Amino acid sequence: MFRNQYDTDVTTWSPAGRLFQVEYAMEAVKQGSAAIGIRSKTHVVLASVNKANSELSSHQKKIFKVDDHIGIAIAGLTADGRVLSRYLRSECINHSFTYESPLPVGRLVVQLADKAQVCTQRSWKRPYGVGLLVAGLDESGAHLYYNCPSGNYFEYQAFAIGSRSQAAKTYLECKFETFMSSSKEDLIRDVLFAIKETLQGDKLTSSICTVSVVGVGEPFHIMDQKTIQELIESFEIKEGEAADHGVVPDRTPEAAPMDI
Image (tube, rainbow, N blue to C red; front, side, top):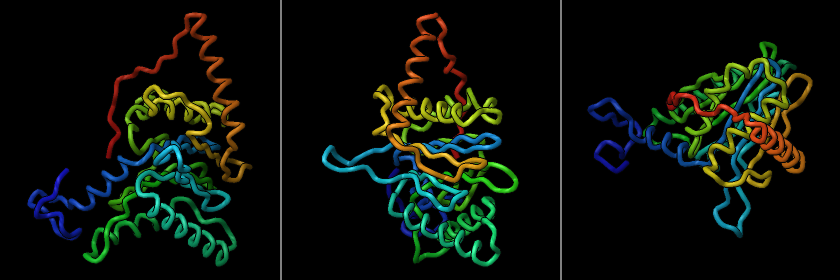
């Protein structure tokens, strides 16, 4: 992508009906480290890739707790993600204080989308350069939403955003029909396999991924690295045993693009 005479202002339309600065913000999401979400009837699992700028630095936090029943995973500009996570926490606290009940996930997502949309309609603002996967549980069940910098939002059974996310989407498209009836352990296994697809040959370890869970009777929490590493090792052992018996997992479905 390159500069042109229609991208100096977020409110300037191109003759083709495009807002280039909004598209640039969506491109920033694609450049960020991958984040993946999967939901069943009772649980939602979020995972992100921990990518450090150098061997001497720590990674940026990509998964944030919003409330006991809601959490987010981000891809894109981390600073924008932190600002939006604070906004989401504030909205949840205000609703809980006023109505003495948890804020429904869908309502919070709409408020977030409205906030993002305002930035596409004001010349003195810029779009948020971050995409959010919002996982939550309310009276209507488990939910997984994707909030786009353009102000659009979509509910998904499973979704992946960030760099090299298409490989994860291809894997999820093969497995999504089983997700609704999956247990929490199965969801964690699938999200780890999806993360592995985005690494393009790099070894999956607990140090390069973060996994969080929210579900019925289980508040949103980030799993500790020791537990994740044990799960990764157990899944690799099962995969190896299946290969020894000549059983090869089917992970090559027809690719169906899910990009927005």
